[in-house]
Amino acid sequence: MTYLIYARKYRPKTFEEMIGQKPVVQTLQNAIKNNRVAQAYIFSGMRGVGKTTAARILAKALNCQLGPTPTPCNKCELCKAISEDRSVDVLEIDGASNRGIDEVRSLREGVKYKPIHSRYKVIIIDEVHMLTTPAFNALLKTLEEPPPHTVFIFATTEFHKVPATIKSRCQHFEFKKISQKEIINHLVDITQREKIKISSSGLNLIAEAADGSLRDAQSLLDKAVAFSGEVINDEDLKEILGTISKDLLFAFSKIILEEKPDEVFPLVEKVIESGYDLRFFYKELVQHFRNLLLVKSAKNPQDLLPLNEEDMNDLKEEAKKASEEELLRYLVALQQGEPGLKFSSHPRIYLEVFVVKLSHFKKITPLKDVVQELEDIKKELKSPSEKEFSKNTFQKEKVLEEKVLEEKAPEVSNQKINETIPNKFEEDKGKREREIETAMKDPSVQSFMDKFKAQVLSIKPIKKAEDDKNKLPFDLGRKK
Ligand SMILES: Nc1ncnc2c1ncn2[C@@H]1O[C@H](COP(=O)(O)OP(=O)(O)O)[C@@H](O)[C@H]1O
Ligand SMILES: [Mg+2]
Ligand SMILES: [Zn+2]
Image (cartoon, rainbow, N blue to C red; front, side):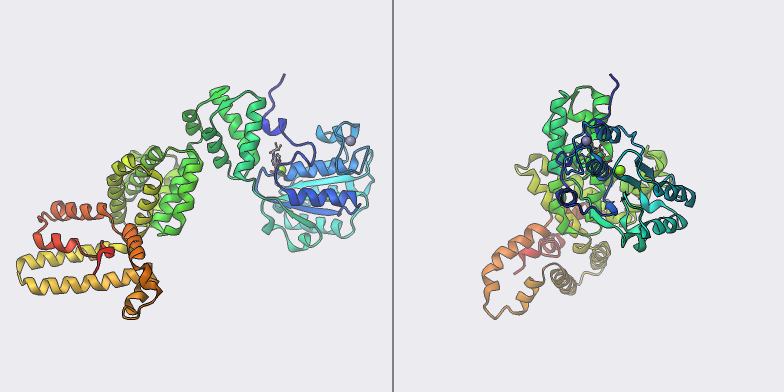
């Protein structure tokens, strides 16, 4: 028996077998039942969500010997011919490779004649947005005087590229991404039938990589079976799916470098859903930041990182979002956070809080301020007018503190203004302060600063600086 890829083997033959796409399926079935089938449809949606599949089922529904029927029999000669791709009345054209006017002209010639064996001619044009303008115009003529007994189905992954003149003559159905859960259920079904052994975290990995495309999920499973045989272990899968973790890592560096703490929680959820071990993931994240720093600072990063050009460019682009110093700070903080994650009894919460902090990093201690502070200390050491120094530093820190507070927690800073008026903010004050403390206080920054002062500038943290450090600006929660 020849080997059939899963996408072919498990292609639905009836509307009922289709996964997801309920509104589309229901509307099409009703249209057939009520004899209100349109002359032209646009099926839009990402790849592998059932557009072509639905188009073929519709062709069968219209032409089945027992039909037109919303439930084609799949047994009659007409149904079989369509399933096996040999019906002369159901034409499938790839718009990407038949883009020109000539193809559309000959199509127009073709549709002049009545269907030979069937009730309807069904013309399916895939990737219709790829047609050239003259081809579109020719197509438009056909749609303006639609030949009887002909149904057009245009499929596209880029609906916005289809000219409005075409759109306005078609009924549009938007095919949605297939949910993670539906993909997993489908994969479970296939693996049971095919007697494939795979863990549920393995299935999660595939479903996550497929990102809404059922066909992609099937192809990944194909790949995994080709790689591992019938017993697929998670390590093999991770190897096969190497590219997903890359996407996920970039998603993390994005929220950190673009300072988007609100996106942390869903993203950590995604890591967990994908079945990644958090510590394993964290290691990769550290490695990712190391790579970002490397491409930012090394003269010839390609000599040090064995990556293809595309991956290298992606890294370089990403590294543009931060300065070299900033990347260094992220990397140091990440490294220092690693043992904490290892020993935390709630690694998920640890990771969430940690990444939220990182995404505030740029705001909390802009490096130029830190350097300025160090400059001040240096000057102070030369001219020890201690009082002046502490007044200045305190003033500066207060201004910085208020700025950060305003940006990060507007209600809290309002509360400060209204301090004398007792109101409901007061009740929550302690709670909010604790929240801010958790989000803002970062021991790794403090210890990094110590090292920075001690090593880089060869200054021992003096007693005074030590005390100040315990106040501000990293320790906003502990104020008065
Ligand atoms: N909604 C769906 N329900 C069931 N199977 C699907 C669905 N979408 C995709 N598939 C699977 O993926 C394969 C390719 O789907 P296809 O209809 O060609 O996707 P599209 O045309 O949207 O790119 C099908 O043969 C089928 O196995
Ligand atoms: Mg298709
Ligand atoms: Zn039939």
